[in-house]
Image (cartoon, rainbow, N blue to C red):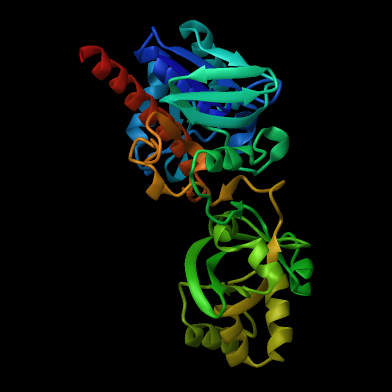
Length: 375
């Protein structure tokens, strides 16, 4: 059985290793358009590689896969799981070492520009010739951080094989605002509730650290909500998006008003710069200042774009794939990782899905081979 995997990132390499570990006779070739695989993986978790999260779906599968390769893990705060070394390079070395050990062929500097399905076989057309195979895995990633390999080419390849692609937008990314207050608050951090409101309708609320910047807002809570902000729709005028901030979710507006009347300001609760802006906006009125602190509205004009995004929102719909990420259109075609329309919050969840979808696809490929052999 010949398998070709397009994409030498986290999901592509993990899938290749998993296939070869469990089916040594398989011929597995990974096609990577950069000069080396796993470049984006080096940058994950600020270089520490937040592999998974104890609260993520399929966490045990991801954990078992890496432990079977000899990688020792350690848990950090909020369920985040890292390699014991706290170095992303350790994860890359373990994966590439397994490729060498089990005989995975990796072809770098190889661009796939066309795929076709003919008579139960797949042909992958590249600038290094045509690769034919029985099983094809698309693991190209999205189009966030092109310099690290995610150039969006997988969407076109998916469409060539009859799949659709949902609307795309940068995700896990900072948000841009037209408000001058952001620049005045640059560097201020605070934990709060943030609600994304689009066309006057609340979409989602999350709690976490918010960081003000000269262009808008950042911080984990911003990143987690950013997939609800669509640059194209904002630019076209179809959407109007506002970030509604509750700076003190643990207290009511009445309690905050009482605090202001008693102590003169909210400086005992919130950063001084923020208190100064709230006081100016309210004209010194305690009731208004308390209301603004609970319902501060910030116009969002877009995201910082794909160059700053960790992932892409959108992709091949999950309705077109089964639980093993196999295509419902073509047998023995698998679409895994970020190329699918599955996005998660910060904390190792997205990388977990990259590995989990890879292992699930590999298990399906291996089970099919053994099923065919029995028949």
